Image (cartoon, rainbow, N blue to C red; front, side, top):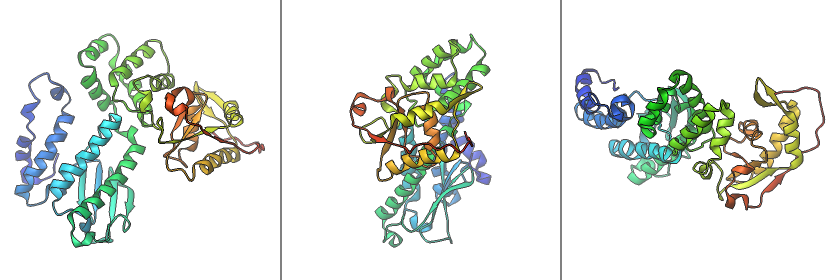
Length: 366
């Protein structure tokens, strides 16, 4: 919805509700996706009567990009709304199968030269200045400004990729089910309690997307979920099985020859397995704080000079625990289980990460 005062009635017409009301199409049952594209079209058309660039209209959007006026290209409507924003959303949708909501662009006039600021739900998540600007951007060069905007959008993409799971809510999963499974899904829910089913499915999809597992093959993922659900398997078991599907495994984050592969030394992995505990059926690592810090420091030191690194562990139950162990210090280092590796990746010689001998202090953290 746009907050444009007297234009409300005109906006309602421009949104073209008649296109998805009164029939049984996917859009009529799930209008969110249909409205998103229409909103962007409506913004451009409304700008002719408001006198403001469409990119500056107050669109309700969870992602906001604030730019210094020197960063705005000469044709903000054409470039920001018709190129930069759609390209950003299409990239994430194509790679991961996740639909990210629209973006609102705002001018950050009167602040530091060359400023950009990224906000999510009105909360600042990133800010920069200076080095994002080409030297001659203030001269108004179209290509230079567009290049600066592209670099800001890359920063936004990095943030969104690290937080992909938050865009997966129950409504989004229902949309995916309708889009990919259609009539078969509606037949399925006739045989069980939909409300009891959609929550666990959403949790599984969020768990996959949290580690950037593509969900493009959603039908296959859903079929596997249904089989394991009927077998009363838990969510972590479902995630492990789905990650190993032949349709999913090649797209696992880090499962390619571009990442330098590291592997924990056998002694280190054995120590972690020994520290693994089940708490109400959930595996955790019970480690002394000092030992925890030593393990993380060893991985950080090994990957310090590598632009793209991945870590391999032998036990797939241990894999997500190791990922959580290092993610605060190494947010861009994926962790894979050995059985998840593609043949070409497994053939690449891995660098072994050793750790110092443990010295107990008696204190344990999880």
